[in-house]
Figure (cartoon, rainbow, N blue to C red):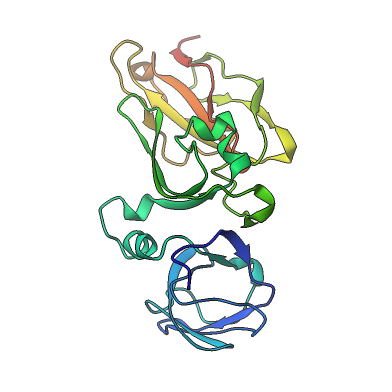
Amino acid sequence: MAIFGTIDGKAFANTIAVTQTDATVTKNAADAVEEGDVLELDGVNYIVRTVASTTSIELHKAYAGSTNGTLAAAKVIRRTPPKAVAEYIIKGGDSAASTTELLFVDATEAGLAANKNRGLNGGGWWQYRTYTDVSGRTRHKAELLAAISTAASAAVGDTEDVITADVVNSIAFGTNNANKTTSSGAATFLVAVTVTNSGTASFQWQKRTSATSGRWTNVSGGTSTNLALTGQTAANGGNQYRVKVTSDNGAPEVTSAVATLTFGS
């Protein structure tokens, strides 16, 4: 068995059966797995501890989701990252493990500026995560775990493109953020964006209370194209808002114009 493979994220062809609090998974014999593989089941990563037969495997821990005799094939994703690293990350080897992704980057992806800007500047398996710094900016931490120069055609599956881009993608503002004045206490900041290659945008609004010294912080629940405020008073005058926009096809993050809330007539 190889120490690592090149399966980036391949969905099963058939449904599986899982039982809550049970580590046994029943699958179709046509869907191959090996001990040490990573299986993402309905968004949660598990490691294949043993392969009991062509139709039965044991996970490294009990399945945490709801019992389902026909979990959709599209929700069963197989990856083959370095075995020891997969165990370290998925089993929680450090405090950042829960926010860390294991990504496979092929030769084409490694050459794209969008990926290089994330620190993913070579082919192979990467440990990757993002965090927000004190100024509200998104920062990237990437560590190359296993260097492999693999053509895109040889990389099996490609489901993590919400992070790594396959082609040059971009996000553009059609309507940008603008200043708002309110006397009623209600105001709505809004943007409109387009993403190339039919990508879908995601939004995170941020706020700061001082234009000179305040720090940007995420607005809880502010994850749509608009941010509707109510109950504002004169004390909120001068608060500023902006939105960070990402996409599900790896386009570089963009940030809107900064807009100020004014309280008055």
